[in-house]
Length: 426
Image 1: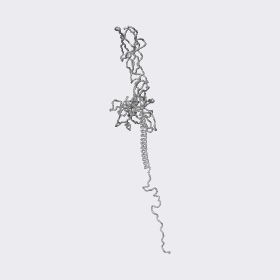
Image 2: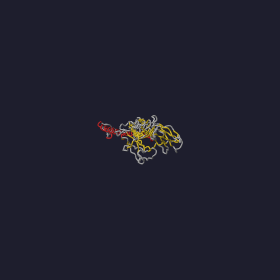
Image 3: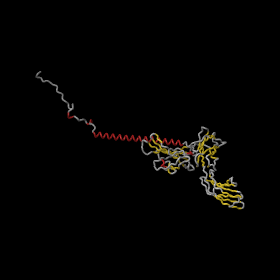
Image 4: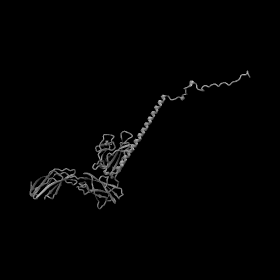
């Protein structure tokens, strides 16, 4: 109907916040705000500090592992060397050369003072054992070796040990091995590892020490070992040498007398001049208990070692070592022989004098006389430089000379000869 009002649907109104208005561009909620440049720099700095700390921790851990490995290598080297030295006969355990003091406190030889060695580094000095002729089997400084990234220098010392409960001053021997180890991956001062072991001659019993001191991070083992099996019996000695007694010989070829009574049978023996290289088997014969032996080396104190075993497969035991002085050098010729003569009735008295001879083992002088110019007789021996002889002045010819002799039986060449005619009294 025309005059009637019609109802229209109103236009939808825009709601605030729907759509984007120019004035809202660039505006965000607080939780959606981005990182500013300053905050980014701070974050990177903190990250760098954290990474540096982590790298330092990794570096320390790597160094610790490397040092531990290097020490294990050094310890293995020391133990190996000690095990090798167990095979050396006790009497022969000695250094080949004299160690010398080193001023550096980082050098193992810093603890050498004269002929003594401080095996603990804390004032525990002991006299060193050195044999140079022939050289002992223990080398003082082994050639440097490299195991992986670890360089090793091995120092060795042999010393006498004085046990208060045992008579005498040279009761036991101590082997000290010092390993200087340096890790190639970790530059710096080399570190030292020290281990000591006692060796006994098999005739004494030693209790392990209650405590041991060392300059290394691990204390040396409190171990007592012996190269001499217990329960051994028998002995040997020198006989038939060219000398005046069993302690000297003028020639290297000697005879050994063996006594193995009550030790079992059959007994096989070996002998050695150095305790390392042994001669061939000798079967003990109680009816002929001797064996020929040749001493090696130059003049001086020589040692002969012996070992015995029951049967070919028996475990050998060491016999007491025997020492002998090899002296192949005769004394020097005594000085000019002089005389004074006097007669009383038919008896003529001749006083002889001469100057001294020189020899390390000089015993004295022998006066020789001849009444025919061909055969000579030793009248007497004397330790002085004069002698007297009385005889008939009617002897057609009397001659004298003097020789010096030593403990090994060596004689010097003769002095000048003094001759007296028949009835000569001046």
